[in-house]
Image (cartoon, chains in turn blue, green):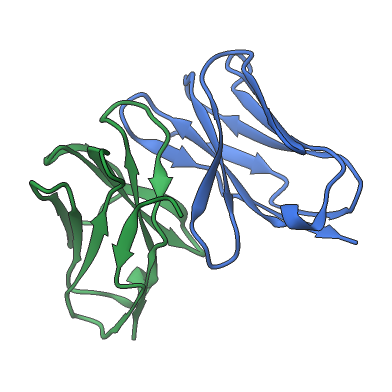
Length: 110
Length: 113
């Protein structure tokens, strides 16, 4: 059975600190997405990682993909309060079926 | 604003009833996806349509059905509703039936009493 596991599920950070969210998946896939969801809101696409070794950066967020290890990371640099949200990774199963992780609820405290 | 619209925003109904959720994709997108988000099940893929045809099926119950119309809008029909069907239902669209970024609508919050 396909598993997409994110950890941690809850993350409380101080502003200015760095941290990494991990996304492990159990099947072969060469495409992975990261989404952000604010409370009560929809999902916003952050990154699409298309191949092994792909790295994308936007502001204080950087995502990477290692298809051999079946691992993606979302690294947060010098966190600010505006980054507080829930972050989801999603694995493309090559058949238009996308499986989401459980999400990591990030809280950035002053 | 993703460009995907969903109606209604909120829906409150009783067990045993039937409801229809509507989604209009972004202009030019041919694919529509439906997702259910609940506290206990997380975000689950239900079904995908591409240019009017069913393309992929996920964890969709037999009581649920969907269709995509010639103007590309889609409807998700939920029948014989149970308390456990209370959830946020998202529609997403993408440019093609292939593997492109999906853009999510604002969602419909369904409450079954």
